[in-house]
Amino acid sequence: MLGANPDLRPGGWTDTWFAGSGRVLNIAVFPSVEVSVVARRKQRGESQITIRAENYGDVYALRARARSWTKHPLIEAGFRLFRLPPGIHLEVTIFSSAPAGASTGTSASVSVAVLGALDLLGERSLTSNELAAKAHYIESELLRLQSGIQDQLCAAYGGINYIEMARYPEASVSPITLPEERAWELESRLLLIYLGKPHSSSAVHESVIRRLEESPRFRRYLEPLREAATAGKQALLRGDLAGFGEAMKANTDAQRKLHPDLVGSRAEQVLALAREHGVSGYKVNGAGGAGGSVTLLLRPGALEKHALIAAIEAAHPDFRNVPIRLVPHGLRRWRTD
Image (tube, rainbow, N blue to C red; front, side, top):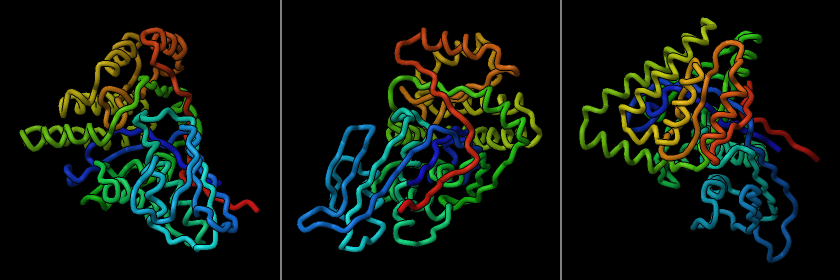
């Protein structure tokens, strides 16, 4: 059994191949992704793998190292990177209470968790960095999706991390540890608002890439994203949550300038309500677009939390608050006899 965690993060878009270099600050949160793998002797004529994707109600057989994808390529691709003993059968169950397509890196968490399980099964000892690199390889190379590197690193490491990418896809990860009371305060002041519809991260990436290719002048908006990540890191190290909120706002403003579709109409509706309630910070998560999610940082004391949640959920039937908690660890894995 094991779990990996989705994330919230300022500084996105600079962890990509088209940015070349970047700086990102990300925060791992619950709800997590859970994967269980039951290994037993394979029966005659039986497929080697059974996938149970509980969120989708899918149960299906999968051949090890199959040459084509069936229902869930992200899950299936992990099995191409490991050679399973021919005599065993694996029953793999995946579940997460995080909304699908919420822009919080859940897909990367699924990939890291599946790879971690297979690594444990084979009694190997891949590091967190190696598991993250393999998960990124799955999305970017095997599935040919546009993908940055930070989601996989956050899922593997957990906690709060400042990630510096000197050259894609190589990166260093620097953990940030907050005093206990400051971590509690940050957790109490954060809200994650799901916008009611999933987004396609790869499709939004393609739009941004086209814009950068057609008009390189937009590349200058990548630097404010890098600066927002550094400012957010420095604010947290000072224990300055107001400064962290300003870095979140700066990140969202830079996203909007990089491409208007990165802050869609649903996100703008939530941000307008957040400003009316005087929040300290706000950020559109991940690739943004028409769906996904928004992170809000409330004022000290979080007095307006429930009034703001009620106003947001009343504004649109699809909007909903997703309860989150900070999580100091990333991938966890263990055996059960």
